Length: 346
Image 1 (tube, rainbow, N blue to C red):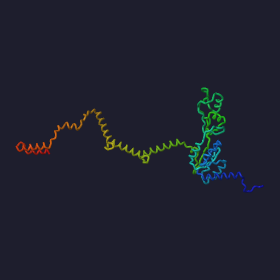
Image 2: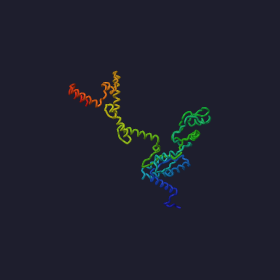
Image 3: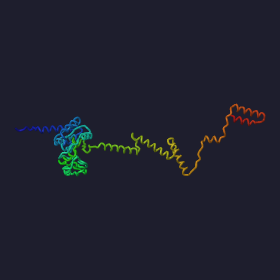
Image 4: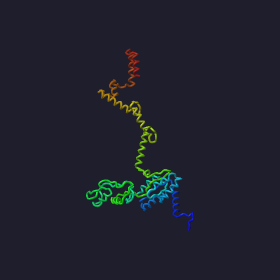
């Protein structure tokens, strides 16, 4: 029986539904990310899905369907089709409103270490450090040598003589190397969602941009702030942070000018006097000048002045004037003597 022209296979209908679902999420979600779930065990995937359910929608499907959805969404979300080249390994798309850098940090912290398996790709350089091992001498020495690890025997135990890079980033890990690494307790693999790129507002942030070293970033930020502060102070640019420093600097500069030019001012008079004293002592020492010690001015004045006589009372002064008057009457004192005496008595 011939199929009607409008007939669509069930599989094709399901694929169209998936593309439509992806297209709707791409158009509505501000943040779209590409993740690689390769080598992620199912139990851990389920746990991560549960942890992310409130903030992140994770869709796994065929790479071709994701590509079709991204290409269609490019009409309304310019540049979103650039995520296609970041659909690596076992790809999936995530949709969220969370900040891209915060999301990357969150996914990175959720990863755990795991032993390598034969056929996996090294996520970075795999290094075997030098040092003792728990193994007794035997076939293990040959096994280590087969994967490029130099070893020997020391104190009855196998010892790795020098640090060795047994696989570089991107290399395929052989089954033999994976076995040796497992025996040495080295777990080079990271298990978790590997966020490869994120799209936001027409910009695609790749993994190397999203992977920010927070400590290094804070040190860089603090260094930039310190340099900006130094520049503002150097050009005397007033801000909330530099005003106090600039005022203090202006005070120090003004004080230095006053001292260098001997400008008499209340704020530096004590230091000017000390400076003058130091200069005088310097002249004295250079010229070997003998300076007699000064006596107390009050004591010196007392020494030069005649001894003070006891003050006479008013009655005594009046009696003296009367006596002088009598003498004048008797011709023994002149009028000038009396006037002069009266003036002294006041």
